[in-house]
Amino acid sequence: MLDKEKKTKIINEHRRHPSDTGSSEIQIALLTERINYLTQHFNKHKKDFHSRTGLMKLVGQRKRLLEYLKREDVNRYENLIKKLSLRK
Image (cartoon, rainbow, N blue to C red; front, side, top):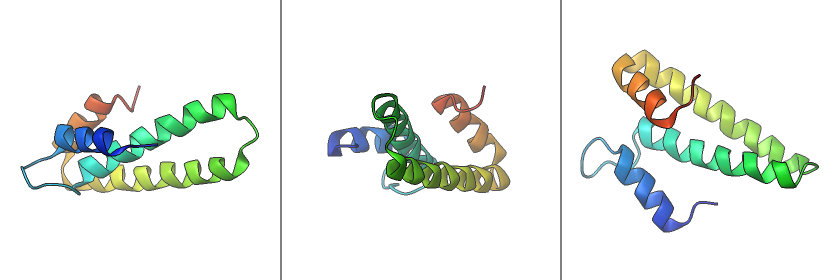
């Protein structure tokens, strides 16, 4: 999972101003990191269906946040998509 140093690094990379800790970009970046971790976890533990349910919830939450960001500011949305390399 995310330890404190990794989480702080992600927050510092995606913040919009010095005291920003919860903007949409930060939330999406943190969710993406957790989703990537769980995806690797399932390569080793194929029958972990309870965690898979949690993964689906995280993916849905990230999807809703991305839709919100796209609706509010398209430029910020596009920059974040490129930075996290989400869409292909």
